[in-house]
Image (cartoon, rainbow, N blue to C red; front, top):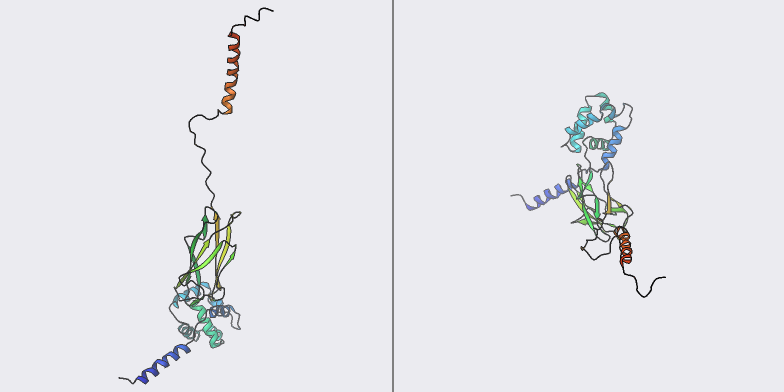
Length: 268
């Protein structure tokens, strides 16, 4: 059995090794892309490795770390003169950046809305909401900014709040996700619709923000049904009066002609 102090020494040494291990930052991907596309005395990496070739390389390095990718590029560079001159002219940090880009080791944020990014209510002061999920579809940790990292721009009827731990200041491992809820509750009817943009700021590449356009509207109310008829007692329609009036006058004139004369008046 090993002495306790020996075990503690090994544990502390392992911790130091972990802390000292290089950490891949998402910004390395962007720097690596710039180096990949930069003109050098022997040309650019992109001159010999077009988009299709780069895609094939990324498939090869899909499960590789930065160090493993750099080692394999270095080995290939020794057998190709132009590539060797170009790659070996880089510093060690730059080689890591190129390896990060080639292996596509980056954080990448993508969002979905459930049930939809289009919200609708039937009257003012009602509310409805949708849940926005942020996914890290990259190979490096996605870190959401702490200061104003999740925000809405646009009109006031929208509010955003975290679901569970929310997304603000969260670190998402590759394949990880977080959620926020956006609520729409207008106090006045929009001319056509209300609009806002959800912005999540993070360290992902190639863009440091993920955005989603959200709209809200009041759906048109159905027209009121026609008044029900009670079957009688109401005023006659004008067209019916117009049809009956001549007949009524005629009937009165006929009655006057048939009435007997007054005997007291005599003959003039």
